[in-house]
Amino acid sequence: MDTVFIRELRADAVIGVYDWERRLRQTLVLDLEMAWDNRPAAAGDDVGRALDYALVSARLVDYIEGSSCQLLETLAEQLAALLLDEFSVPWLRLRLSKPGAVLQARDVGVQIERGERGG
Image (cartoon, rainbow, N blue to C red; front, side):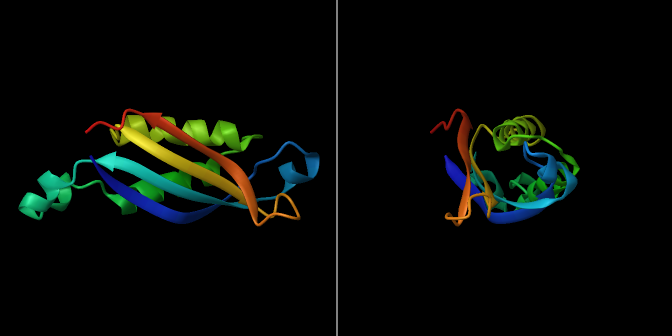
């Protein structure tokens, strides 16, 4: 199985458990790998058979910017479910980070894998 990836996709969201976090928008950064069989698209040079990473990116940014979860874990699960359902991605690895959340670290976050990778 091939991999389609998106790196450092940025979107602003209301996220956090503290009162001050609920009053502002914070930038989140998403790294994404998705299993996809690229052979049908490549064989016919057919974008209609490819996983449209521009469409995936736009959908994720829209979802993140409309969200208001307290936990990154919750938002990561929601994004994974969206990708599995709406884009029929069989497997994904999603890394969602919150830069600046811990002063001494560049960023913190969660990474999850969902679905079956296949062969």
